[in-house]
Image 1 (cartoon, rainbow, N blue to C red):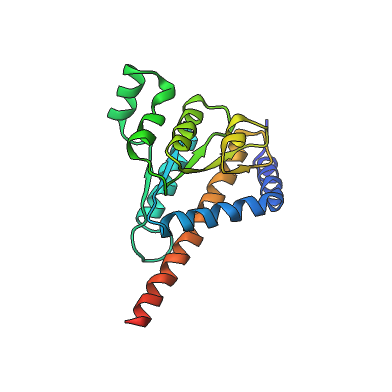
Image 2: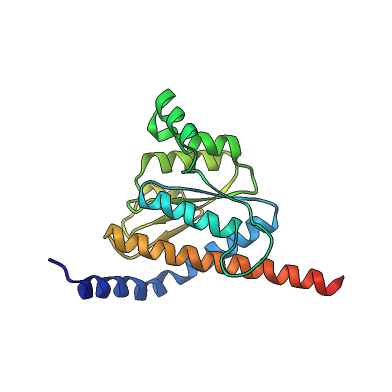
Length: 196
């Protein structure tokens, strides 16, 4: 049986290796800032724990992360049970996110597509729908090469093949993105106030 200290050590080892993908993480942050500045919105999709991460990150963009500022446009495609069940029932499970991307996505938008394996069929379908709409895509996966990594505009490959450790890194990265996007718009608001 694993002890908590062994799990903590594994967690710390994965986080320390994120330095090796720092450029990709920072590029994702820049892309998200640019998306909002260009009047776009952020769509997010994923399954299971990754679905919860989508809702968590979207809430912090829309409401706030640490600072009071304008609401930022973000939608978790994992939350509307009527859409999810109708799409799965009337078409198939792989369509549950792509159908929403078709309906809601625009050229200036960015899709954050989360799949620890990088092989989730419904996430891949959403990415392909986003590309058809001219959207950018940030793919968040584990270390394995996958179709999601190949399709994404920016691929964030967490250096682990353990689902829990990958998800822990994903939310850390998501929090950092929330912080830098929030900082960009807090500064913009301050600048506008100083010019008044």
